Length: 173
Length: 173
Image 1: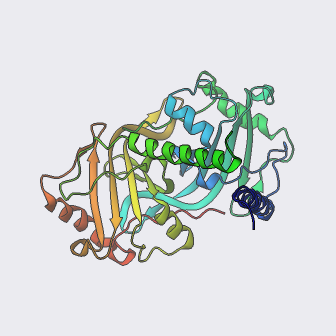
Image 2: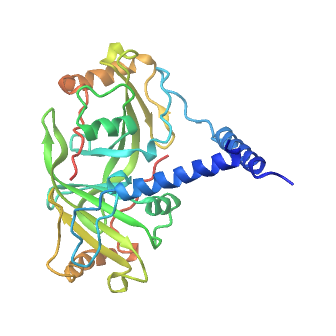
Image 3: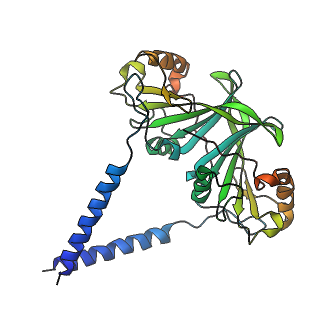
């Protein structure tokens, strides 16, 4: 007959095995990495919301999400600079009008998902941020070569004083 | 000397005690319930995003979140009708312009958080949905009495064919 300690040990073994199996079954991303080597962040669709914007110059709605590190920093108001490990994701949609409420602009065609990854040691040439973007439903990496980040960094330079981030995190009661 | 099984038993006891303490320390909501008795959903700020909209008729940006049941239904495309237990939350902000990108409309003052709770047995008079709204940072319940839901229900009636929901969940690759 098994001792209680042995049973617990066996159960612990099963638990570890379950975790190992679950990990190995997690499908590797079929999405190609960006030209600078950055890979699509896992589970970004489950990240929490940091902000939203509507751009009239290109008629797009944007939802800004953050990984756990980004959410923690945003809620603590510690976003200038953002901490290493923070990732901001932006989901961009073309405008369309709501059929039952014509004055409401809502997400139409999905344009792209783009990300800023904070690593002040790794991304020294672009203000401590690594940039990547995947286009459309096909999730095609943006950029012909690794230099595409110069465009990203250039566009974000006007908000250098806000650690290169346009988004001001929402503040809720 | 303690046997291994005894040690594990003691540790398990501590673990259960920790959970009990953590539960008892979870602060009860200081937010008053809506006039129809609906209480502010817990942890809604951690819910995942279902959509976004920009209303030109009242100059507001809206972020639509869903609890786990709503997210599951949205991702499965099973939202007509939405399942019982689904809750949709809408965070509403007054428009403002981004100082560094004037064509970008971003969240300004927080207006209110409002919710739709699906329970087809409980909320038979309002299409199976319970409505509640809390105003501003003060989170003041909206409505003088329980009849305030007639206003909510009336406004949502034009989208009766979409189970009274305006939001079309975003679809991501």
